[in-house]
Image (tube, rainbow, N blue to C red; front, side):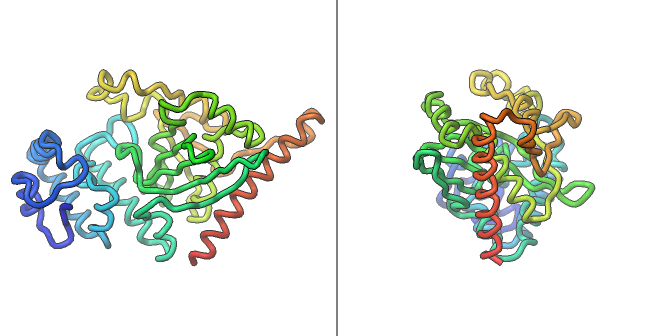
Length: 307
């Protein structure tokens, strides 16, 4: 693994150039290393400053174990299409500085070196559901990922970072995936039925809202399908078969509204009044809301126990 804590930028650059020591993740790929070196030479000031700010983070070598390609993230679209290197630097560094400003025990949840179980619950007929927080699995879409599993099968994954904003910090959602491609639609349908009609993506979004409220974050932004990183020209051809998400439909279903090229989302999702519902639907909606309340309470208890 490439170490950074006691390594100057020049030494790090030479490590990459000469492939000294064991390399992990994409650093094993010669083309990836060469592209990093080339991009660093094209924008040396931004690359050096970013490296120095990474170097200043507490436990940077632990962070690199979780996110080995972190030094290269400044050179590629991050969280959304477009953006400049200085803004990527601000967002990435800002995320880790925010997490490291939280109580130390909170950092075990939001700076995880493994999957951390946030909530376990059972569905309508005893089905097993688990919600985990982990280091981001889609490195362009955010530093953290929330995952919902149904009987040990992933059915929804939300990637995000906590970035600086004019009012302090906000959560920025860079990606929202359903089940992997090898999982058929029947699994999603069964998971939705087991959750009294709540879609898996709705559940992971509610989990994000609960986490952010506990961290005093009240603003959430999210990409649309048009501003996702894979809409960048460099990915448009290569990723055209893989990106089929219709984010806008989901954001609008939780009362999100357009915000430039992104969406601004509520920190609380408004619930329907029982008086608005037909009597035959009230029991199911009550179970939905009870489930969401249970998830929120479990997260609050978990964070309180980490104080």
